[in-house]
Image 1 (tube, helix red, strand yellow):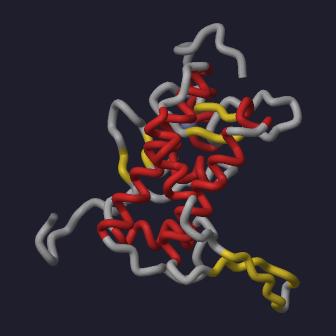
Image 2: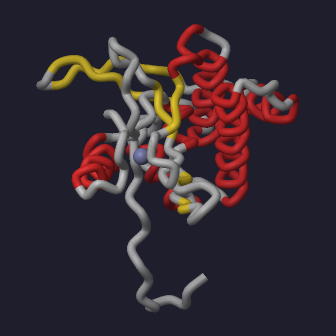
Image 3: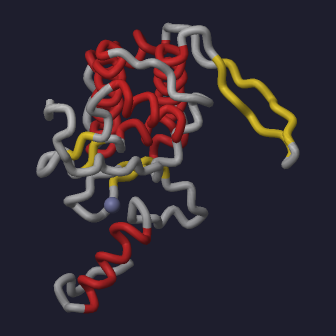
Length: 198
Ligand SMILES: [Zn+2]
């Protein structure tokens, strides 16, 4: 922990390329296995992530225990996704973690009427636990259903972000074109990725 007033690098920005809350949570770690960029280092960042993910209207007070639970859920979902991608049998432990967190009351959606039309806001008496429950339930719905086969990992081997390919042709390869897709294009232009197709 840096001393107060010590200048540190800005925290890495959140990315939302997963297409589902549970995959967006998995993507709060990037470059797994090489750099392991952690985007949820503390409660303040978790609270902000929940707002940016649309799971809270204002940053909830997230404790260290909340951060541990969020990361535990994240790694369990990642473990399950990894097994789906690799066509391996999922771990009982990962399934148990998701089931345990899904057991809490989840967030309640509420319609709001504003100047621009109808919007949805999420509420819950214990906002962080409810948000994690909502994410765990999303993982159960996604990974047990027909869309599980559309979960992919970015084709840039360094990136490791996962996403739901909801394109009609099911040929999405990159977490985002402006991230890894363009890097690959540049690579091809330089002849470093000969033979690769988009
Ligand atoms: Zn990527």
